[in-house]
Amino acid sequence: MNQGVVEPEGRRVHLTGQVAWDADFNVLHAGDAEGQTHAALDNIENVLEAVGGTLDDVVSIVTYFVRAEDKAAISRARKARLSPASGPAATGIQVAGLWDPDLLVELAAIAVVPHERYHEPKD
Image (cartoon, rainbow, N blue to C red; front, side):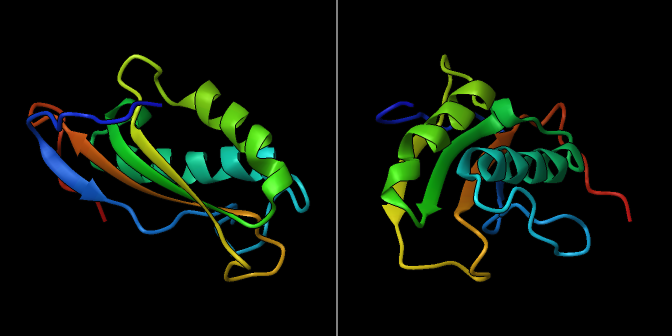
């Protein structure tokens, strides 16, 4: 992850905290922080695809995590999915708990989708 990222031209997209929920709000990968990080990144990717973006457009990400021992697993998942060349500025914050007690990780991201790819989401 980078210490700082210069925001490119494009449409800024702020994503709410994304967690390892499926479409019915069931927790995926209970007890597995790496799996939950991948699932949260899947959700971020889905939101960005709806406006023409990709994970490569993420310029900033905050990771909220419950267990200190999960830092390496969370880092592996982020490194596997987020571009190291343009990787986002990143912050990690350990918290006492998240919305659902089975959730271990929550990701809040900001992305900048280039004007030529950006489109309004379809209904």
